[in-house]
Amino acid sequence: MSTTPAQTGHAPQPAPAELGPAEIGVGMRLSVHPHTDRFVEVILGALDDVDAAGLTEGLTIETDDVSTYVGATVAPGEQRLASYLAALVTAASRRSAGGHVVAHVLLSRGCPGEASCDLTTTRLPGAAPVVLVPGELPAVAQWSLYPLLDGDGGAGAHMSHIEEAIATARRDGVAVAPRHYATRLAGDLSQVVATAVDAWARVGATVPHVVTHLTLSVGSPTPVQEER
Image 1 (cartoon, rainbow, N blue to C red):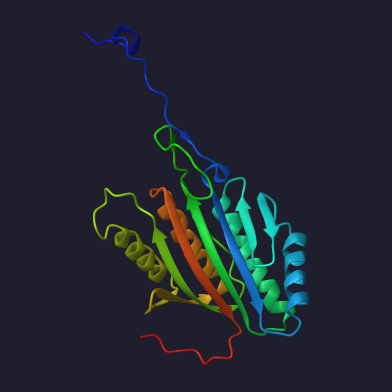
Image 2: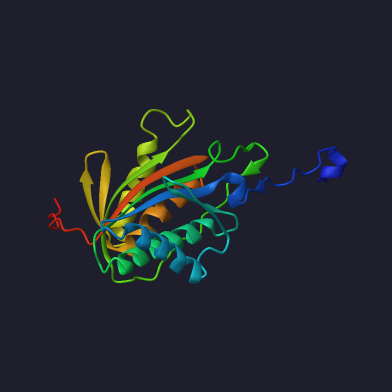
């Protein structure tokens, strides 16, 4: 004879609630450095361009004397951050007439980090694929991914996430090469940004806190290095 939850006295437990981007802390800090005497005009103009394009919706943006904080308040937060970053660097490149522009980016997703949350009663949000339309602006980047795991994975467990992210970048057609303390990515700016942000987001769907460092360079006067 079968029994129902009510007959056994054990009510079914509700599924854990999924956290939103603002609750878990999905955001980035970025600094844009146009290599021109007109850097103030270029930076402020690029910020205005991205705002005028409507790419600030669902984002909290705060600029100080060091960098700009961009926090996602609604889903898909990772997609919004990637779109904003690619558009800002593109606008800075355009306003500097294709000159050398560098962007330093720190992305963070999860808690404890920007936010504190109890993952025994809530669950990590999933991550939709991050996709950007190619913009035909060649870029190179140095990229580091840091899954901040808690204990039970064993020594070196974080490397499986990093190796999978690098393999995915290769499958996506992004040129990948090892560098000291980083991985070099090369391709269209939108493709490079989407690859790094997408990998960070996918790891964040299973790891409570994950961080990525990304240094982007467009229009560099340094000759392109051959991949090894």
